Amino acid sequence: MDALLAAGLVLALIFLFLGLGVWIFVGLLAVSGLSLALLAGMDISRIGTIAANIVYRYSTTWELAAIPMFIWMGEIIFRTDISDRIFRGLTPFVNWLPGRLLHTNVLGCTMFAAVSGSSAATAATVGKITTTELSRRGYDQSLSLGSLAGAGSFGLLIPPSIVMIVYGILAEVSISRLFAAGVLPGIMIAALFSGYIAFRAVLKPGIAPKAESRFNPLELIGAIIDLLPIITLMVIVLGAIYSGIATPSEAAAVGVFGAIVITICLRQFSVAMLVRTLLGAVVSSAMICSILIAAAFLSTAMGYLHIPSEIARAIGEWQLSPSMLIVVLSLFYLVLGLFLDGVSIIVMSLPITLPLAMQAGIDPVWFGIFLIVTVELGQITPPVGFNLFILQSLTGQSVGRVARYAFPFFLLMLGAIALLVWFPEIALWLPSTLYD
Picture 1 (cartoon, one colour):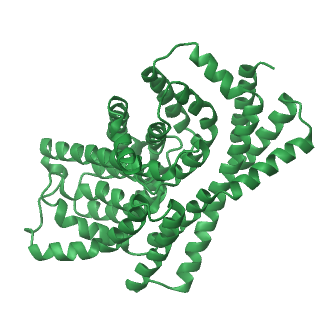
Picture 2 (picture 1 turned 120 degrees about the vertical axis):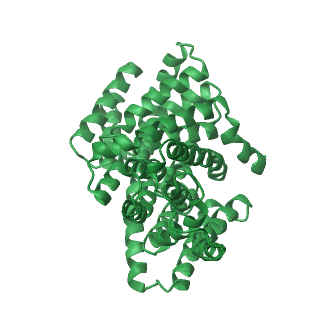
Picture 3 (picture 1 turned 90 degrees about the vertical axis):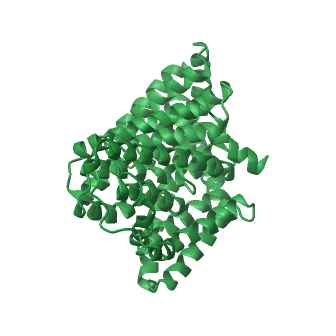
């Protein structure tokens, strides 16, 4: 069967199962098995052997151990008062900026993302404090919710990122290099967000009320103490990875231990809390790992049908420049982001898009960062923008209204993608400096 026709049938099967509301990993397994049986003519025993080999290979992948560890660390932090401490600790540092406490959304999400690895956890944890406090103090709601929706997606980009680990495993790219590559783009997008907030505050000072009191130098000491737990975790986890002392999986385990020690020091530790966090981590990890294994099965099935190579050949005949290919892929991922979450987008599309990028001479580490930023856009685009749903539950605002508030930050992230295309060293400089 023609590979392009097979690709169309596989895609139709995927949308059929997703439209029926089937669990994603079950749908991917079903599509993979049906594709091999109907389109490749394989018998059930051979399909079972292929599936068993994939399950064994991915279940014994050491890098995969980082996923449950980082999720567990984020669960522990989520159930402490660290989000309150981040808000209090950042307040003295942002009071002098135009827009004042609105910057706590951006900086708070940046810091929390550096220990959580999850976009949803970042938006929910920071949002449960800032949405209430900023509203009570009279800050502009559209800018408050919009900046939180946009900055909440930092959990995907700023290491340690669960999505980065998934991409690194599937693309067979060093996860440590990916983590390093995400640092400067994450800081750049955070700077764009804060710059936009300051610009809006200069044009319209009323969006942020005047400071309630003058800065007291003694507040600086209290602020540093409040920020110390989150900074300590950041240093432990990222310092261990970038110094070469530990692999990401080992650093994740150390991070869990550090999070437990911090909760003990804060007198917030209990056996019941530990059990709840462990159960939450098991559920989330099982979901992600099962999707990852099912996606690997789908990738294998598509390989047997020669779909990636034929699509790559067909697009190669268009003779697109690398820049035009990036534009086409950006539009492709923007459409996928309307309907799917980040992990699903990556695992279902990578077998096709990564060969195209490699054929065009695009660095796989850079492509991973580009892909993650485009996936971030899906977090704030309806109808399936997870950050929009989180803010809806926190504030009672409609998803459509929150999406409108987030639109300027959507445009800023598009601008960040353009900067990454024009200046690829933004993503590649740090990993090349640390590891070459």
